[in-house]
Length: 238
Image 1 (cartoon, one colour):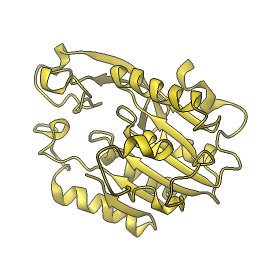
Image 2 (tube, one colour):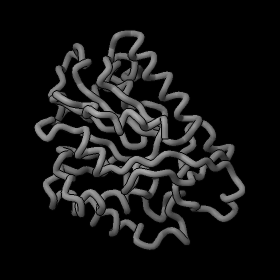
Image 3 (cartoon, helix red, strand yellow):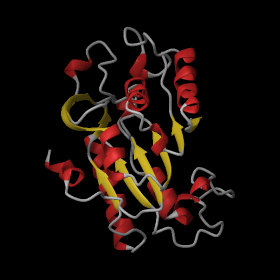
Image 4 (cartoon, helix red, strand yellow):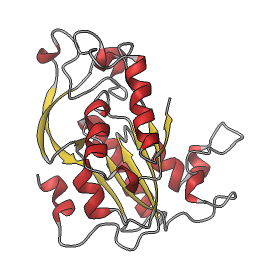
């Protein structure tokens, strides 16, 4: 896909980066704003988020522009918002050329996939529940789009420096049950130092029956433990 062409370029996108943030399932760019424009993101709160603490950011929120980032979001309506967030940060000189956003899903291999968009009236703001899984009867009659998929192990090996401090967030609406074991099989999970993983179970829209097999709470906890056993400081992200 032309949208992901820079990932196939001659040079690693994050070459020489020492601190890296990876956002798999960016939604509308909340965490990008919190990282690079925290004064705006913290409106209405008194305490700063500790989400990015592993990157050793200064407590007084001085420039974070040397933190590199790759972000991915496949839902078309959210892509528009993410592009706006990135363009605004770049226009205000809060980020440089080392921050990249891609309108794509994360998977086990490069390619394309049919993505089902949860555009029901109560979800239309952020399309929560949109997924590569056709999780609800009749969803095939709803909005759907073919989206580029980026293979995560290849992405990490090619673009993330082994010596970098890497914090990642993964919110991929049920695909974590495929992607995490893939990272472990390919022995690249250790390229991520700390991972905030939103796990989805049969209580979430993406993983309701008949898509609940292997996606119950004990399965989710085993998934997190498998990352910890591989040396990744993994947390459940709510």
